[in-house]
Each structure stands twice: as structure tokens, then as C-alpha cells.
Length: 600
Image 1 (cartoon, one colour):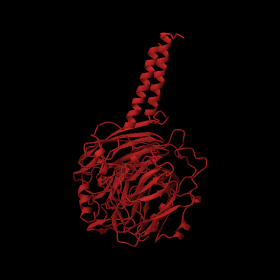
Image 2 (tube, rainbow, N blue to C red; image 1 turned 180 degrees about the vertical axis):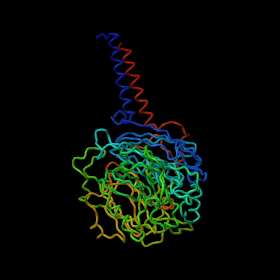
Image 3 (cartoon, rainbow, N blue to C red; image 1 turned 60 degrees about the vertical axis):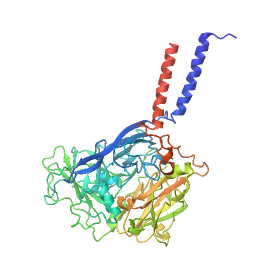
Image 4 (cartoon, rainbow, N blue to C red; image 1 turned 90 degrees about the vertical axis):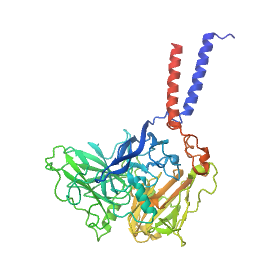
């Protein structure tokens, strides 16, 4: 049967259309799902600032210290193209962001090869089923002590209500101890087996203290001013980005209403002051209900220290009402008076409870997750002790093992059958043997329910963090954890978070549902202990799918160690996935335009 030229041309166009649409959809890697994409470009470099009156080199992101906020929403795809303009390797990590099946983007040495100087690398991940307040920072070489940190906010989707009235404003506050030496000098101090000593101060949003005391604070220090309007309520997202010092946060004459902790809404409770430990993030609702006759002090002061020696280690900002009549004056609001009573801070921590009726990333008609009824499948007691000398160098340990980073990232070694890169033999209890350096990690069970007990036999307050997960903080107490300690667990409304404090001479127990495949870093957030080896990894593989549950190795993966010969010459561009998304959208646009032209 004869076919007309017009009919044939139309059929050919339709066939081509179908073919190209199919190719475009394949190349997008589900880019056409409803989840939006946000993109950032980070230039990480050195700048010179004088936060404590002494010029020093700090790490800035896009010339900002602290760096810019990443403002995402539940299920958003986030693309961050990081340009390393430092003189040493760089990785950016995203603690608290639970990258589902995608530890390739985690930004620590066990999962990623570092970004060399003058190179760039594009992170491409999804903020899956998540809300809350977090911060990013550089994970290598003690760099966080020099800055490089910034805020990461995951907002509720519009259809999911927050469990409080919409605040009138959203304010980011970074607090942290600070040294006037740069991070390379601090690193050298640790390398020579010395302690860092007392910090030189506490910064608030990268700035030094307001001159509340002319003896302790020299003239000319730039301080932070927080601008507010009377009668309004603000959400304050407060992050302790410091090295090792727990800080007490308070605002003169104002009540802090706790509302969220690292991605989970809490039962709202009033506090006059709150202890925030290294690596932790909280949201407080603060109503500006005071007389505007003066400004008010905002304070972050060191905890669990000799206050006479640490008096200068106090950060002070100014809360300024728009109709304020004068500057803040007089003594700072009193810190907690519990030098001889160590229970106050622990009781405050135990008072933080999950809001089981609040929706987070998705509707929650069933209420809170009933974690207390799940059988524990594995128990790991991770014991920390004061640093010890191993082979002539000072090291920190967990269960007697001081972690040494593998030459080749763990899952990359798996994918390429690199033998001997690490060991799956991390002990689940402290062993009676000499401490040693090793690349020993935890062989965790996929879909298991793990109990981890952090036993702090060190002399300092510590924080511990797990990437890729939140865990239920079910208990903490002084003394040594035993099986009988489970009788004191909170099995109903314990807060779920990713960083927990562990008091010296005490333990903290957490429960983790191991549903996120990949390799995930568990570590001390105290930078000195982390730098000296107090970390390991959880390797979680789905045995039924032989690792296929994970996302594939990204096209732009960096190679190092045993696989360094696979690394191609650097090309300054975005990740393959983001490019394919953009190109696929462009391709469909061109096809549609072509069809419109053809059939017009």
C-alpha cells in the first residue's frame, strides 16, 4: 500500500520524538519527579579577619565567615559545586543530613577521596524525608577550627504544618570556642603530643565579644548585633561549631522555648539557659517581650571548667530591639551555678523529649515511632579513654583502636575489589589488649536495630555523631553501663537526633534502625579527639541485593589510593547527574519546539 510523503514524515517525527523522550527520561535519573532542585557554588578560600583583635587566616565560603546558608525543603535535590581554593585537600561534610543510600556524597575520608587544591567537585544529593536545623563544615585536617562552616536548613513542605505559630523571623547563631592560632598550628600542637590548652575566646557568628568588661575585652572588637522588633517571636537556630568546649547559651531576661533538635521537633519547654555541646544544633522560639529601655546580652560561656581561669572564654552578642533606648550594660546574666552538682546539665539533656504528635517531613497520623518495642539485634559499647601513646605518638581511641583512614574510600574499594583496605573486625566491647592504630570498622546488619553505648572514661565532656542517621537518645547516667541500665531507658519519647553529649565518667545509650545502606562515619565531634583517631565506620550492605540498594557510584567520583590511576584530568563542571538533568530538560524543550514547528 502506498504511503504518502506527508504521512511518512509525520510517522518519522513521532518515532524520533518517542526515541528522544525515552533517552532524555533515562538520562535524568528521575529528574522529572516533583522534587525541585536547588544549586549552589561554593568557593572555599582563606581570608584574613580579626575576630579577637588579632589578624588571622580563616576559611571562608564565598568570602563569607560563617559561610552562606543552604536553604532547602523536604525532598529537595541539592547540588553544591565546591571549588577548593585552599592550599591543602578539602572535603565538605553535611552532618545530620540523612542521604538515603548515598554515602558517596558524605564528605569524609572513609567515603570520599579528597578534593585537591585548585580542583572542584560537585555534591549532588537529596534531603529525603527530612526537616530541621543543621550545619556543614570542612571535615579534613582540623579545618573546622579555622571556619568553613555554614547553615543547612531543611524546611517543612507547605502542606505539612510546623507545630508552632509561624515565627516572625528566622535567625542563625553560630557559637564556638576559638583560638587565635590557625588550624595548621593547632594541628602541629596535637601532632607533637601536646594539649591545645584554654581557647582564646568564644565567637558568635564569627565575631568576638561585645565589650561588657573593659578588662577582659579589648577595645575595637567587632561584635554581633541581632536585630529584632518588639512583640515579635523569632526562631533562633543555634549551632555549636567549636572545637571541644561545651557552651551555655542564654539571652538576658528572655525565655528560650526549645522547639527542635537536629531535625526533630521537641516537646516545647521553657529554659532560662541551655547547654549546647560541640556539634549540636537546636531551634529556640524567643518572644521579644521585654522593655526596650536597653539592649540585651546574648551569651555563650564555657561549661564544666574553672570559671576564674576561663573567664575570657565567653562570647557576647547584643540583642537589639528596633526601639531600644540604650546599649546593654551591667553584669552578664549568671551562668548555671553547678560546680559541685553535675546532675543539672544531664537532667536538662534528659528533659528534651520528642514531640510525637508533630509532623515532620511527612504526615504522621500514627504518632511517634514505637522504637521501644523493637528487639535489639546488636550491642556495641564504645569506650573512650584519655589519649594514649601508640608507637611514639599521641592518639585517641575507641575500644582501644585509634582509627587510621584508609588509602582508598571503603565502598570504592569494595566496588573495585581492592583487598586489604580495611578490616570488618571492630570489637563490640573494650578488649583487654594494648591500644593500636588500625583501619577497623563495624560490619553492621542491614535492617538491624543496633544499641550503641558511648562509655566516656575520659576526663572531658564529649559529643559523638553518626552520619547518615538519626538515633534515639534513650538514656544517660554516671558510672559504668551494664545490661541492668536498660531498665532506666526512655522507651516512649526519647529525642531522635544525630549528635549526643556524653558526660565524663558517664554513659549515653542510643538506638539506631539500620535502614540506610552505605558506609557511615561514627566519631567524636570534639575535633582534637577526632583528629587523633576517635572514630570508625558502620558498613551497611543489603546482602540480598549485593549493594544494589545503594545509588550507583557517581560519574564524577574522585579516585585516590590504590585507584589513583583511574583519576582523569580535572574538568571544571557540575556533576554528571545535574548536567544530565539540565540537558534532558533542554532536550525535551527542543523536541517540543521542533514538533510545534513541524506541525504548524
